[in-house]
Image (cartoon, rainbow, N blue to C red; front, side, top):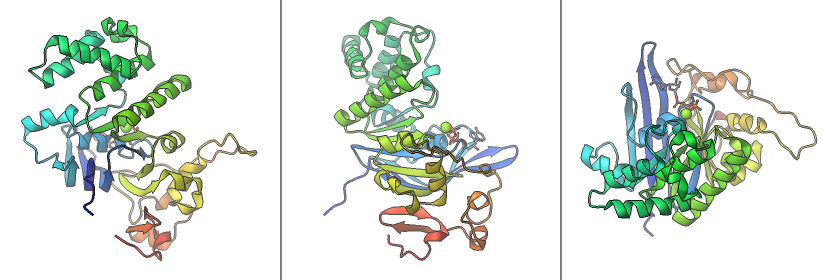
Length: 328
Ligand SMILES: Nc1ncnc2c1ncn2[C@@H]1O[C@H](COP(=O)(O)OP(=O)(O)OP(=O)(O)O)[C@@H](O)[C@H]1O
Ligand SMILES: [Mg+2]
């Protein structure tokens, strides 16, 4: 049987920033496929390369960043070999992104309606203003904002409502892939819950492929069926969320992150953070980048970078799994 086409396909993607201190190796050799109607979580500590990867997929990298290797395909199209004009049409209509802190970056001098109309009218020159206004109303309904707020300016809205507007803009043209970079991080717990429920509902109806970026493991595992765990720009593990219920089966870094989640049901509530700091991405540690912090590290980990091993459908880069038969 022919394999279904992934909505997003990353193959050996690396991205570096040119900085005064040297090349910052922000994303290192990551591969991933996301199919329609699926949410994949991307998790990692601050500075691990999550936003850089999201921006790279959108081909919206900063001027000092370069895709140094790999291919990024969305709906089978190589994003980096696309002509600029085609890319302009492709972006937002096929792939879109809710940028980190975007709710604070809405244009302060335009109303919500003006910002939404702009998305419709700039992408479809043949669309009438009437039609665009009708579509804007429909969008308000999808993200559950009272239509009266179409006439509001961003500063007149609460954080939760601004985030709903940002999500509305991202899904306005009904893209196949939506990247959400920390969409709820700046919101209080109650608002965060309502936004998450809204994302789940939209996903159920629209069958989007969503890459959900967060540093909150409990949130990601609740929302997504698969999770990619990033450390120093690498996917040190890609696993189904279900298996996270058994921490002992995972990469030591994943285990460390899992231990850092407060367990409300546990009798003995001890939260252990991971000792040490993330590595310097200009001068990565030898061998496995996690070895200086890893409680299970041994000699080999300092010298040789682990290959990907496939264990029960999980992809793990860790020498502890070296004896496990690797399958492609
Ligand atoms: N414009 C830039 N120039 C140089 N280095 C950069 C630039 N932007 C990001 N970096 C570096 O790239 C690395 C990855 O950054 P990135 O923003 O992708 O991390 P992140 O995982 O999204 O972090 P956070 O959870 O804090 O959002 C960091 O070390 C960061 O300092
Ligand atoms: Mg980020």
